[in-house]
Image (cartoon, rainbow, N blue to C red; front, side, top):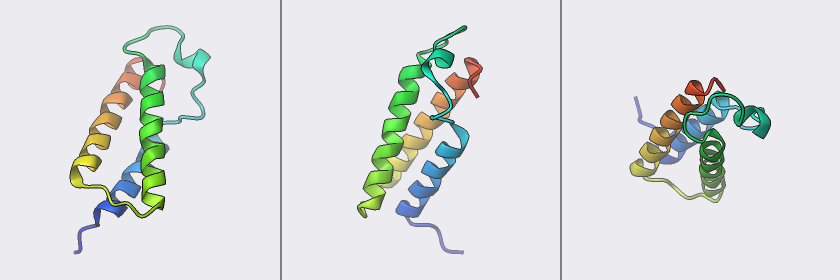
Length: 89
């Protein structure tokens, strides 16, 4: 079985992030109400910018390295946990 190249691995990761974290559905009023563990709003903004950056870079034909994929995956996991603690996902 052939291993995926880094571009297809990053594309898959970006797709998983978009599927699991509803960026468009989380409005500021919902994100910034009630219990707050970490700043979910800022974390969501950061993650969305990273995802947009990689979508744009991949569309231009840039290939990420394994460190880029690992960094985005770790950030997404940590941010997802914060969203869970804040009952947003």
